[in-house]
Length: 537
Image (cartoon, rainbow, N blue to C red):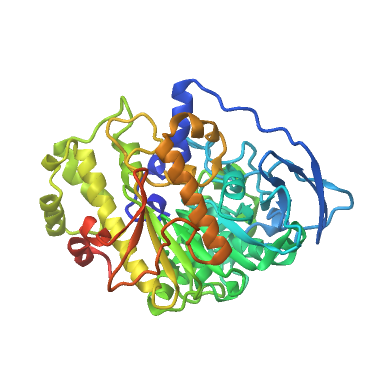
């Protein structure tokens, strides 16, 4: 997946998640986060595979590290997820399971659990400390993490703020799923007749089925599930909306900063997968066995991702399903950040003591960010976004790349809205928590997450760095998100509701520290009239 799913082909360094960026704040400040809260009480539930002992933290009840499928190891590597085994005794559910294997490059230790293992298909369930006295079941949020399909884990996202400070009671489930080659290799030797690849998506679907079967014992309602994700997680949500076999597993969707994937046809994915296998020395009749015998580190350090259509999971690509109206017709909250691509511009040109972008290098940087544009089209981009009109060339690149990205999103809004009640937002904090930089990042990719979640290793910064206005913004955003999970409409009491999106008179909720407001200028603000003719058809 490229640049968080938005297009362009950034290098391996740029493809790392934002957790690397914000963790640098901690490293450079020399500060350390607090020790995890000690559990103050134990709790027991019985699910289909046995008993679990969770913990009650100060603001929620947590059951962590629950296996929702069998370990995908040995002969189960590159097969659809198999059922989890039962256990005879009470299983401790106080600690999250390992992250799935992922590249251990520059930022390999960031954005995932400290422990990584191919045995990684675990999820975490967070509930209110006390369930409703009347026994009514609670709505459920299932969260798919981002990370370009090559990194991340579900336990990064602490649900305490959403549960304790939202707009009503809900339950939150965060999941792991297979990443990189483990999740998306589609070599023809791995095809069991239903099509190779998409194993990470099958994991997500298995987690949703686990929720449907088990969430009631935690106090949740299996018929009131909202599927949500950010970046690669948002693209995954769209993929599940496109998958016929996911129908009925969720009633609403949230997509943050991630488009519907175009995908690749099965023949192309198989050819790419065969070439990948050959590079690792696996050819001929024993290709599948050879691949399954490769060390975990070899595969983790050679990531490959592809959303494969033409098989049983996805008859057509998610973006094609969006365009022809065959996505699941569920209420959808969708949006992005006002300066999305600033993160990737920063990682290439904005790190202090790094090499800044110069005016002389601006044209080449535009071409690298938008490789599908012709020289004549790049001329037009330079005319509309001249480097001389911005304090730094990097800011011109960020603005042009972001406007192109967000224009594509407005097309997604319009395609969703005829069948899906669609609610749109823009995260517009001009100065969110950010790493040391040589140009202001604005509302960069994933910078909204700290307003919703207690992010592992970063939550201690929440009350230290954010201003009172940013704290208010975070409180209000959590209320919008939780109200949508509860009511399938983002209409918290006392705050202006987000209306359904009307392409003829579009309104987008702009989330700002200075005060949230509905705007009708989103397309104009991002020069959609200029960009629409330049987008791929």
